[in-house]
Every structure is written in structure tokens, then in C-alpha cells.
Image (cartoon, rainbow, N blue to C red; front, top):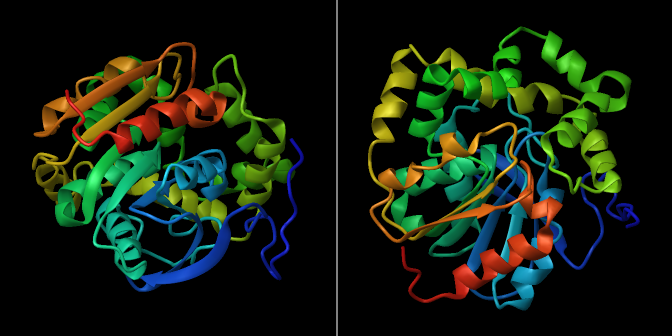
Amino acid sequence: MTLPESSTPGGGPVRLDGPWTHRDVAANGARFHIAEMGDGPLVLLLHGFPQFWWTWRHQLPALAEAGFRAVAMDLRGVGGSDRTPRGYDPANLALDITGVVRSLGEPDAALVGHDLGGYLAWTAAVMRPKLVRRLVVSSMPHPRRWRSAMLSDFAQSRAGSHIWGFQRPWLPERQLVAEDAELVGRLIRDWSGPRPVEEEAVDAYRRAMLVPSTAHCSIEPYRWLVRSLARPDGVQFNRRMKRPVRVPTLHLHGSLDPVMRTRSAAGSGEYVEAPYRWRLFDGLGHFPHEEDPAAFTAELVNWLKDPEPDR
């Protein structure tokens, strides 16, 4: 694979060329970069750490061909979106997502989220249920499951050790950008299964992390998740997430995911009062949509096109 260069003035390492269209939309007091293609019901794709919209490069064309309007957005503080000084708590980040749905002129969307994007997709489905048509989450348990596993399961706490490390001031940012963001490449390789993420894509993630302020903004959501555990805002958020998800949900996970253990993710269906389907990809790691895009995309498209997904 040859990584395309951006033809967009000022696009830098973010607005990579392809069959999609790049533009910016305003939502929730900020500006968000999106890549979109296709027509039909909206499918909004949400990336995780340490990536940006490019992680969905395989799914965008497939979804468009399947009859959907496929849109991959850069989360607040990442890629081509605004890097605001605050607003990185999950409730506000979820409002970014539902705000983008409204800005695109759509009544609702199927949310597809990986890693942090999955955490925010869970949150958006609870906070703004009328704007979420369906929910697809990869490599991330329900927020209440995540909290419980990180606090009570030593193996999961150790697997998510990078999140504890992010609580230090300034040093994590410096480590992320050191030596041309070499750590980004190492994390992606370490978190992948036997089928690694393409090296050209890893290079793109490294370049995107070097955009000023991206490292700091990428870490801020994780700082909130830990520092708020005993604060009133964190307790209130956790209580709020007791509300069940009431839209059909597809939960995808790699059996070899070293960051989010299968036992931590499994069982999230207890928070879903709607059809819930659990799909474990054998032999894949933390990035199933990139490690085996054909299998992941087939599962995603077939489920989205199923008029009555069962349990």
C-alpha cells in the first residue's frame, strides 16, 4: 500500500486523498473535520487512540457501496478537528458526536466506535438515544464495565497501564512525540495481533500525532476518566450510565486484544435492553478493523443491513 499525500492546502498529514470528500462541520462549539462518501442512512465512524479518521479507510468505501452515507470524523483535539483547551470529558465528547449528526442534517446515525470512540459511542447512545439508530462498538466495554474492570481486575488494570501512566503531567506528551512519535508506532504494533496494522498506516498515525497540541489533547480524555473516579462529576457520570442502551447493538472484539481483555468487554450486554450481538474475532488484537478489514467490514455491513438483528 502506498500512502497518498494530501492535496488539500494546509491539510498536512491529516486530509489524505481517496474516494472520500473532506470538509469541516461545526458542532457543540467547535469545528470538526470529516471524511465522507456515499448516500443513504448515516453511519458515523469514531476512531480511538492513538489514531484519527484514517483508521476507517477500509470501511468508508465498503459502507458507501452498501448504500450508506459513511462519515469518519476526527474527535475533538485530534486530526483536523479543533484543539480546544477543555471539553474532554466523555459527556461533552459525546455531545460533539451527536452535534455532528445534527450538523450533517440527519435525523439519526448508526454509530461505529473503536477504543475511545467506542466508549463515546456507548455514552452517546445513553445521553441522546433519539439520535442513535444503531450502535457498533469495537475493543471497548460499556463504560461501567470499563470502570469496574480497571478498578477490580488486576490483569485488566495492568493491561491498561498506559492509562495510569497518562496521569503524570507533561511527560506523557513528550514521550508521545519523541523521535517522530516512535511510541505511537510501538503501541500500535504491541497492541496488534499476528496480522499487524500496515506500516504505511502506522507512519500516518505517527505524523498526525506530531501536529502541535495533538498529544496533549489525545491524553486529556484518559486523564478525566481516572481523575474523576472519586470526584462528583465522575460519580455522576457513572450513575448516569446506568441507563440502559435501547438500540440494537453489535459488540466486536479481538480474542488476542492485549489492551482490553475479552473478559472485561464480555458482559456489556447487561446494559443493553435491545437486540445485542457479541462477535469475537479469533486471532485478532486491538485493531480488528485494520488487522482483518475484510472480516470486520463484512460483519459490520451485514449487521447494519439486517432489518431485524436478533440477539
